Every structure is written in structure tokens, then in C-alpha cells.
Length: 281
Length: 312
Image (cartoon, rainbow over all chains, first blue to last red; front, side, top):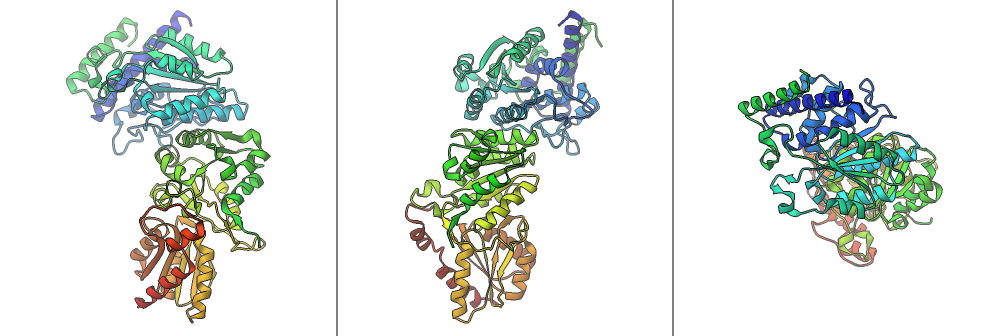
């Protein structure tokens, strides 16, 4: 990835973060913390790697994405809107009665959403199903999913990991959004699922550990996953919950809370400043 | 005529219609019991064992369905409808995906395995899920037709199937099956028995016994529990004035619930139920259990007599 491309991706990530803050603010509820932590992963996927068609979201040969941690819908919707699946103006209608933007991703309602999620543990299984179908049909599309670290407390995640390795789904790449926090506090205090990288290795996945808010590292990890044969890849993306908005960073209180007007303005100002430093608008 | 279990006919039908390359079959380590093994032998490339992980199986089925597959996911009904209930709701019904749940070993006719494996609640649970279609065929001929109908319908289907070999009610040669349309298999003017699954042949036996008493009973095979055939129910209520429901399921929320909902809202009519009376099953031979829980022609006769007493 050249410097110009990296710069553009960084600007896109800031753009998406601004939409996340604004959407959750207008909704009056939602999940900003985890949305901000996985923004860079979504940016690298949708703006560098994934083969998707905004004019034909159902293209049979497209790459698929499943947001297994479905509560971070604001991040997915903002990414899809910036990508062009629907107008970014719609984002402020998130969670509103007349909006198609449901509180959690709904494939029947939102163009570009490949799977309805929100109940933790199920999305990664669905992504296994998509990868299995791809293998069966000898198609070369790839399947991506993001799971949460708190989500790994759900037993179904491990059932899905078992199946992914059993069927040698090297067309499947999962990201662990490893921000270390869940609703009630630190994952290690609530119910520790650690050590996650060792567990994924023991489940026979190819495991890559990176700084999950570093676009270059994410890009390289995806390239490595694409080149890996015979097993699925888990990218353990060490992230910061609330990344990009200083007062939200690493605070579990921002898991599922909307900012006030003042907090929204401060967050947007900070992101505007970040954009300015990147030379963008 | 040789008896056949609906699970047996299900496996055969999967193999018969399985030439369609879009059909895939998943199982959770029960392929010999659910009879999906028949499909596995015919189309090994399109069969996937998910292991003892029913929740995972349902969501994998959903993922495959988003890629254009017609997915049959099979396990025992207790695990399909209860263990994996929330996966069926959120990953299959909510996005209305093309997944067919082949739920075998439903009801108390599972027999010796006992209450842990005898679901009498599955239809009630599945019936409350939006977008779900439920079929509970009464014999091998009808099971084959139900599998075909499930393939033709684009959306979630719950197929309720049994372990026990049953006598054939229908003739293969001239059988007309329409999803959502009950089949009147015997006309009658005094009372109507609406039955589903293995209670259909018992209802025919009951009708014969009633005939000996001078009671002319109509018998309806209600193979589709959802959407329920309102027309045939209301017509029967108007013409016979008394209804008996018969199901190998809890009295709560299954066929009895569905028929009652139609009647009270459209044409209030006396009804008596032959069903499991809000209790768990237990171990025993199927025939012993039928007697213990009142799932017999004799009890259908008794309930028909009772309901006729309160008929207007």
C-alpha cells in the first residue's frame, strides 16, 4: 500500500467515525465505543480489499461481510453509506421509526448488509456457512467477519471456530475486535475468555496478532490471510474502545451510551481536527 | 401395507429431490436417526455434518441460505426447536432465509428415550415465530409431498417428523397436496375431528368406532399447522357444530391453539382436545405411552361424545 492510499484510508476512517458519533447522537442510543474500535478494520475491508458492488449489492460473486458483534451497526452503516450503498444523509435516522436503519444489522432492510446480526455468537456461524457455500460452489469470493472479545464468552463462537477449521475454510477471515471491555467492565473481570490468541491457535486457526487501529497492519494481515491455505485466519486486532474520541477511549461506560449535544460537538471537533491534520475536510 | 416412519420418508424424499444442486443437507451427528444418511449416500458432496452443535448448525444453515442454497438442517425436534430456538428466530426467521428444519423424533412416540428427548412443545414455539411455516405430515406419502412443498417455498420451514413407523393414510397415485390446505379425508355431519401427524390415522379409527354408535364424524388431516387453513376449519364448524382436535403435542399452542384461535375469532364453536395435558412425557413403549397420555382412538371417541353434548 503506498503512502497516498494509506492517507486516503485514514481520511475515510475519520469520516466514518464522524458519522458514527453523529448517528448515535441523533438516535439518542446505540453503541459508540465498539463502533469506534472496529472502524479501521471496516475501512481497510471496504475501501481496500473487499470486492463489492454498490449497484448490485446481491452480486453472487461479491465478498461477504458479517458483523457478528452486531451492536456496532453504527460503524457498519456508516461504512456502507460512505462506500455509496445508500446516502450518508440517512445515517442520522438510525433507530428511528420510519428508517430502514434498524438498531442492529438487518439484511432485509439495509443495502449492503449480508447477514442480520445482533444476537452474539450467531454471526460467526453464519460466516462459516457463507464460506462453506463458497467452497461448495468453487467460487473465489472471500468472507469476513468481526467478533467481539466479550462475544467470545458465547459458546457458539467456539462451535463456529471448530467448524471453520474442520472444513478448512481458508476463504474465511475473522477479526477479533480485542478492546478488552464489555458492558459491565473489563472482560477479564466479568468472565475472562483469555488467552484468546492461544485458544484460537488450539482451535487450529491461523492466528495473526496486530494493532487493530493501525491501517497498515490490518492491510498486511488481510494479505497474509488471503495467502494462507488450508485453514481460516483469525486476526487478533488489539484495539482501543472509543478510538479517535479521547474522552471515550478505553472507557467501558461508552459501550452503549449516546453522547449529549456538548459531547457530540466535542467529539466532532476532535475528529475534524484529526481530519485537518491529514489534510482533508 | 408396510408401515413407514415419516423420518424414513423424509430421508428418501431428500435423496429423490436432491438432484437439484442448490440443495444442501446439514446434520448434527444424527444422520442415521434423522435418515439424512440417505441423502448423504446419494450426494456426499452436499452433505455437511456439523457435529453436536445445533445452534451452530442453524446459523451455518442461515449463512449458506444467503448464498442461494436451499438448506435442510436436521436434528431431533427437541434440539431444533428448543436448543437452537433463538438461532432459528434471529438467524433464520427474522431475515426470512431459505432454511428447512427437518425435525425428527417429535412427540412422545420417541418412546423409551423418555421426557428429555420427547418434545411436546415444539410446534407452539415454532408457531410463534414470524415468517415460519410448519408442516406435520401424517404418513410417508404426505411427507414426500411436504418435502417437495418445502423446497418450492422460499423461506423458513419447520417439518415435524416422527420416529415411529405409521400406517399409510394416503395413496401415492392420486394424492393432491397443497401447503396450507387441510385435507378432508372423511366426510361427516355430526362432529369434525381435526388431526395432525400420527393422530390422523387414529382419528380415522375413531371415526369408524363413532360410526358404529351412529355418529357421523368428519376427519380432517391438518398437515400444515402454520399458516393454518381457516376456511376448512370454519366450514367444519358451520356444518358440524362441534370440533375435536387431535395432536401428539401439548394442548398449549399447537394444533389445538391454532384451531381455537380461528374459531373464537370467526365462528365460536365447542371444542375438545386430545393432546398432552401440559406435562412432560416419560419412558415406555410408544403404544403404552399413547394409552397413558390419552392419544388413542378411544379418547378421540370420548371427546367427540363430550363435545357433542355441548354443541348448540
